Amino acid sequence: MSQKSEIRPAHRSAVLVIAQAFKETLSAAEVAAALGRGVRRAGAEPRVMLGSDGGDGLLEALAPHCARVTSYDAPDPMMRPIQAPVGWLDDHAVVLESRLVCGLSLLAPDERDPLRTSTKGVGVVIQRVAADGARVVYVGLGGSATMDGGLGMARAWGWAPRDARGAVLAEGGGALSDLARLEPGRRPPVRLVGLCDVANPLLGVTGARLFAAQKGASAAAEARLAQGLERLATVAASGARDAAQRPGAGAAGGLGFGLIVFGGAELVAGAAFVLEATGFAGALDGARLVVTGEGAFDRSSVGGKLTGEVMQRAQAAGVPVLLLAPQATDVPPGVYLESGGGRWTATDLESRAAVGVARVLRLLGR
Image 1 (tube, rainbow, N blue to C red):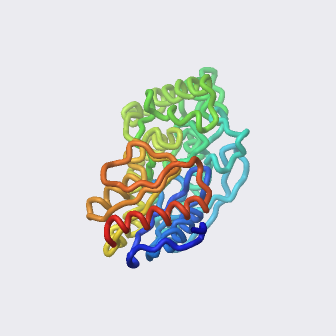
Image 2: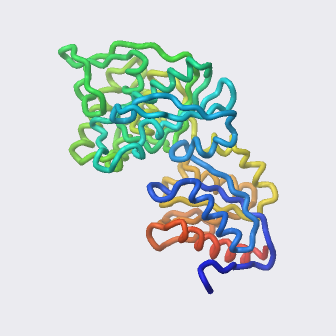
Image 3: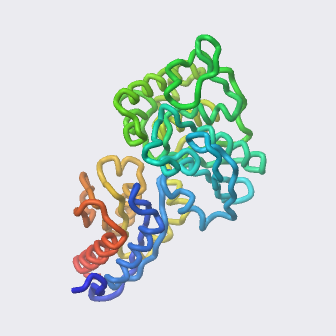
């Protein structure tokens, strides 16, 4: 059988596809296209929706539900000028994907250095959308290149971090261990909501330091960054130590913490927010199968990540789920799996989807 031949079950069935980016491999749009082609090769009718858990692909997933998308001048993680896009859900509600302002995707591999990178651009964009009439800003947390605890963002709002001699600290997480005091700034006049892709606190072995290596930190740099975040939580403000323990405070290198302490934000699960905003519950009606996937599925995938949230909601509605993931462990009972073979190309994903969907629909007799 040739790679592009159709694999047909007994009859055509509606298949709901929830597509998200495969980290550092395939974009959400590439995943959506490949899965759609694969489902059609299996002889089924796909309904394709883009999803996100607050990290990669948030704005892409919500763009069809936005009244408009605009861009603002802002500094990137290395303080270079960029155009940062935001989506307006209506005249007063904005979605800001922090990855598009301070994310790893904006840096070359040899530029990754959370000792130096800053979230200041996030603060700049929030100020600018507030000036343009925003009353609520949903900030997607995930894929960041930073570990400054959101202090860079706060600098854009007038906060001034100083060392014991009174000198202003350099940008980046590496200077936080020298923090002696903070001169307060002013919160922007908007309601802030952080959309978290993880539930990690700021501090401790399960805190933001877990993600330091993927941001480019060595073991020594990780220890220094963790020490700096401890210092920030001690100095920042009354109640900051409690805020540091909240689920999601460690998201995006502690940007979740910064949103709480410097912006009065609430943190919510990004996956649940996106599924509600895109009408996932209604799309389940009439679906015979849900297809979803990610580059690597493990126990953390069911702790607030999009894939786990999709699985739980689909199974609760009595709709079977097919998971496509090159690497997969700790897959929940009852979930069909197509896995193995290392990192997949778009062609690999299409072929795996075609085989997997045909197999599952035959098993289900649909």
